[in-house]
Figure 1 (cartoon, helix red, strand yellow):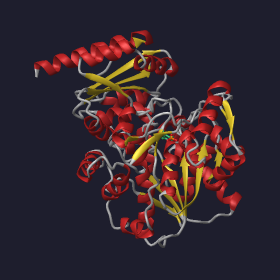
Figure 2 (cartoon, rainbow, N blue to C red):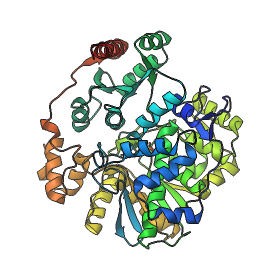
Figure 3 (cartoon, rainbow, N blue to C red):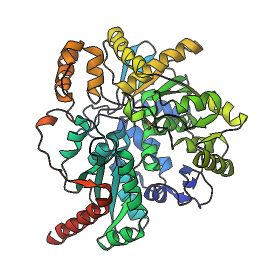
Figure 4 (cartoon, helix red, strand yellow):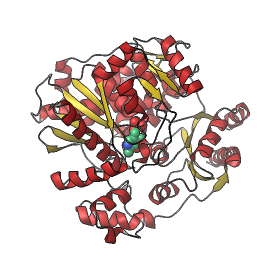
Length: 507
Ligand SMILES: *Cc1c(COP(=O)(O)O)cnc(C)c1O
């Protein structure tokens, strides 16, 4: 299988090349050149397989330059009982007849990014070797919270890799900060940056683009790489759980082979839901993909009108992982729905850069609307969704999942569609515990409490244990205390590679 760029100005490469490069040199995103289809029988067979076996089945046709053994090894390194606190990895909870919640947060950081970031490092190391690259991989991440910790957990102690994470000193929650500064592992660096997330991100981008820096880290045996959500190596593992959820419904007798389902996806960068689109293209019987947004509802507007317009006020919400105005992965969808018309994609992306908006043609818009449906929840609706889900089903959800459940309710009421539905749950309720505790507990109880106290209160209230990744966090020892100005970030990188080289020499 070869991967082409959505901008059409780069010759297709095998999976290893696409994963190693992350973004195509012409600025586009890598997409498979061929469509893979599974038969009804193939999907039926999955009902009897474990999550790990299902993963191998899905990854194989996409990673044809990897051997089955290499894929199996990567899958086993990623989805095992040391990292996931549930034997089914991504279990499906049934709330009601036809309403299921796919729990994608049983990994080490309690959010769905673990599903991809636990396996990406293993795919990346193999991809480097396959493309004749002998340098170690140095991953740089700018994070507003979630991705940084998930990347740290994914790359921690993976041979041949090192990772540096930069976060805005005052721009992450207490829990997120503690998760990062207590990070263990011999190949990790965590740095607070004086400034906001934009300063941090610009700092990382500048380092990536600095050829002198590239040369200097190369002299110390490293090559920069990124782990961001446009890498095909992050997208492809996400296709697995759509099939897995369907297979579970088959094995429970909730579906007959070929029956259609809907998936509802709390969406930010359009990566998760795009994996659902690829699953549908591969023959998974998906009726609608429901795109659930928060008040940053740029995608809802796009799906209903055909115009993508980022010229709007950025809103901070209680579902912060969906606070995004540029959904990068949408570019892949446009490429697929225009039958691989790179020229048109280039024009729309040029419009987005120049004017902050673009409008697709009528046919593309109709294609989008055949597959997707979208609405959004504001913070008030999100809180009431947490409350009503608890009162109706005795089930505790986080703020992002609550957005999904609210939008699903709207979808059902608007369309009357009663097909079995799977709502993707993207974070544990303990991950964004402050908002969840405030929704479920009395105001007098929660007033003035810090996040760590609320974590315990939520556990006592719900009878659910605090997940391993968050338990005892406040007592863990702080290992990373460096604070830098954004213009000192290159020096931090140099110090890091020099120190690591000395460590290697002394071994
Ligand atoms: C990243 C994230 C999302 C958004 O996923 P996209 O792939 O960016 O659409 C939703 N919920 C949570 C908890 C996340 O961490």
